[in-house]
Length: 230
Image 1 (cartoon, one colour):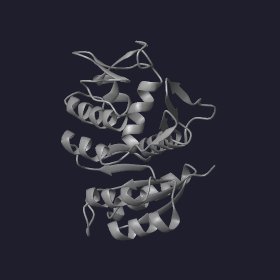
Image 2 (cartoon, helix red, strand yellow):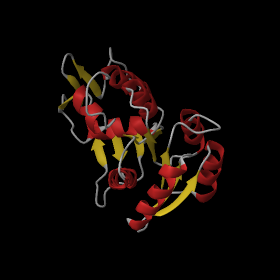
Image 3 (cartoon, rainbow, N blue to C red):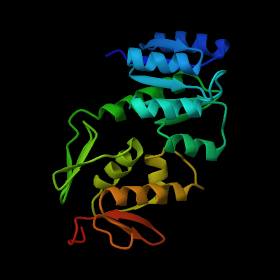
């Protein structure tokens, strides 16, 4: 199936060759040169994936991502020259699905796009995960607890899914940063702590009174069936 990409990039010297190269790789590509035109195109045309530059002429890409996330769950790859770790974490926490630092090749963007689309769609044949009363469906990206739907952000879902796929196993923060946030280096452990706190709250528990999410001090976190230790 042809993926429909929306490239929001104001630099013509970057936009034109990227469009051509991505089309040669089998994608259907539309483009916008401003934040507001990109937002309109994303809502009207419903692309499969958005590639977002941050340095846009009318509105910073961070604000555009915030606006987009209030009305759409379309996967977003941030593609920008900003390589500061704090900025990378901020954008991923704000709802970006991946972060690519310029300069990059069309082949790199193509590979990232295909990976993000696979994750957002769910791999064929992936089973629903059930841990106690917790049900995590990777295909629909829906979660329920004791039959009651739980509303999660995309990042919270990815975090819970990663843990639910490994019940009873201690997962390190380093692994979570690498596999969930796609950050292949350290320095952002607080991001995991904050998201675990939010996730616990939505599951009706706390770090002091855990049911499913158990912190293993100095190591990581473990998801267990309540009362069973597994």
